[in-house]
Length: 97
Image (cartoon, rainbow, N blue to C red):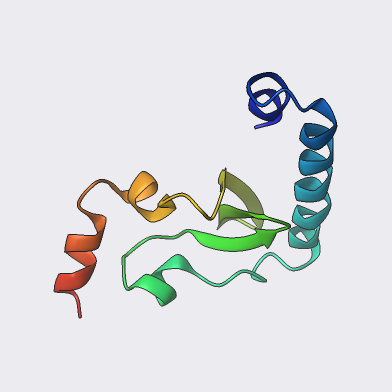
């Protein structure tokens, strides 16, 4: 993410600030690992992922044996559920209603 913002968007200052913001917000999970709601509770899609808002981004993470693993940090303007779960995510989600 930092490299993309810095090199592709030619904005190293924004890259640094973005990474600092995300890192600062994610530190909350060290004390409160269940702070983010589960993706399954919100979508009905079976997954062990949770999400956490980090400034203008969303961190998707899982908890295993009291350790938090960041799966991905995404821009919420992306169709991140489709990116994570496949092109037919919305069709499968519709059948669960």
